[in-house]
Length: 313
Image (cartoon, rainbow, N blue to C red; front, side, top):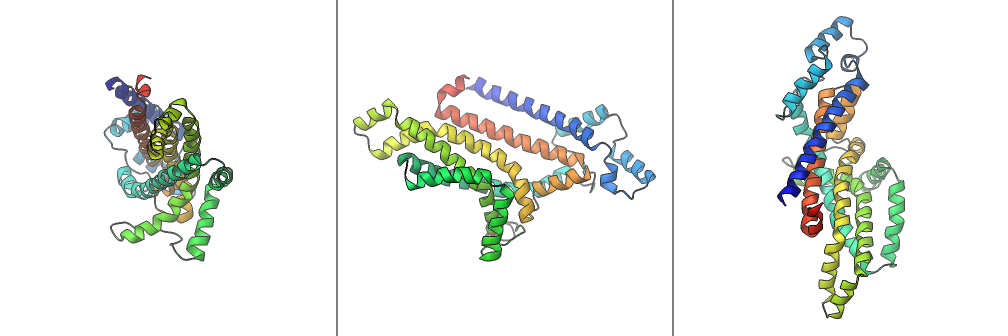
């Protein structure tokens, strides 16, 4: 078990280093001189030169990379080129907003995905099973921003059940916070619910037809106990999809946050990309990859507990 954990940790660290390094050099190559985006096209050459010296982009690129990397390994992602505030402060302010909707969307995906997947697995060919197949085609064909706009028009503007835009901090009002993240979370979760349910349904049907399951039934085990056995063996595929969905939802949150005008990392990513604010983009990249590594590591631990054969890989 120790070697299993060590391998996952080493691979995660290597992935983090490769992605961070690649992002640094690609961002500098793509953006080039960031001063026009930061100062505007009306800035004079003297102003641009002064800003280049202030933010350090007049130094050799390898020197800039080493300076950034030596601070990043300690958790210091530098200073925003736009506001000259610490990048960590921007991330600490924006990250809870995005995590609120992503975690809530993941919980919705897990709960409803398991319920629908097991129900369809127990009764293949039922009305619910046919609805799941139809939804899997429709929801994957619809753009996420279109689903978000429809939810806003129906439930916010039409019925008035939720606020159309904005975010309420839970410190200010827990009820307002729940109301502000519900529609964005549903917009993110719809496709994930269908994918988790479909994976669990297919795995459930495959396991349910195995010989050992028939043996359990022949021995007189109750339907509930047999279902629990089948569910445990069918869950790895659904857990893998759910973990992938969490990572995917972080990316999907960018679009959803723009529709609902939420001050999360999606909005920050868009602003930083437009302005050429490389330190913020690098901080966002590293934090996102850390989440990916942690989620995959936890997934491997859970799969290793569910299926001991995984630990031998």
